[in-house]
Length: 258
Length: 128
View 1 (spheres, chains in turn green, purple):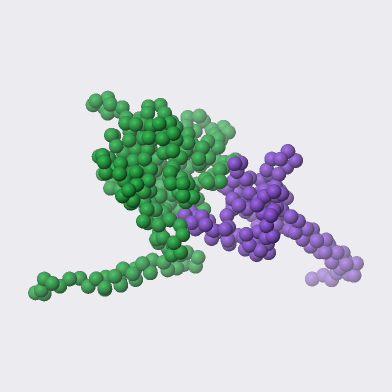
View 2 (view 1 turned 180 degrees about the vertical axis):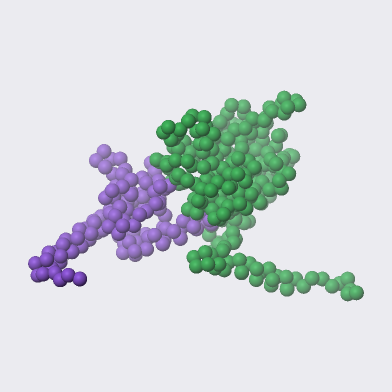
């Protein structure tokens, strides 16, 4: 038998893993380049040293308040999407784009009601990314799960795969858009944690801002990897949970008192 | 192939000349909105001829950097094209940049290249 000091040759492992990474960025066909979600070499853009996330305190989320929803609608131009002519009202209610929605939960045993805003949970292992046939559904290095509408073909597999019903499909032409959220017929979309704000260094989402402005402070947004961020401190100070933690998706959006 | 007689040949040459001058006028007339950022610049974000030839590649490269890497530091941005090149009508309302005879259309109509950017992207500058 070999002696117990024998350890795996880490240099060899390192070499092998580097080779795999290098092979991951090769051209598989003309014009098709496989790339990894690593940060850019020039240091610009987002990096995996950050993971954006939220903690939502459902006790502070007021019944009947929809500030976060209207703030999101305005920020991302969702209020500019009008019901297509001739469409049924009920169908429109079901199919209109919604990045964030208010959900009311009632415990059948105790009849306790809790309110919570539900949006894309920005999973570490997002099922929508797994099923996307074109790579349009992807996770950014900083943990934001989003859709690249330039390559989305509108197949809606991701909508089927998402356990949180977070994604919407645009069924008809849209007359007007905001600069930060281009939107057109035939693509899927969902909450991107106000990526344009984060890229501009604003550091907070429209929904969290609106909630704080109304004095509820139910949404704490920040960097989960920064131990000094408000969200990390809040997560440490109280028990929280992920919705459908049984799916082991490691969501970036967490809830307390639910 | 049939042969052109002298008169026809002259007519063809003249027609070609007229077409050329029309297209030259279409692309050399100023398409910059008065008072915009571009109005005070000698060139666009790159020399004008370079922009005419390569804007599509610059924009495509930039779009992937923005969407996938969140790097918005690039000088090429579609929103910036719109903010300087979407003209205003007599009432002062901005006209969609891709509308007939507007900035995009003036060349794209001539070159018969269909653009789909503005099916999703905002066509007029955002009011601040």
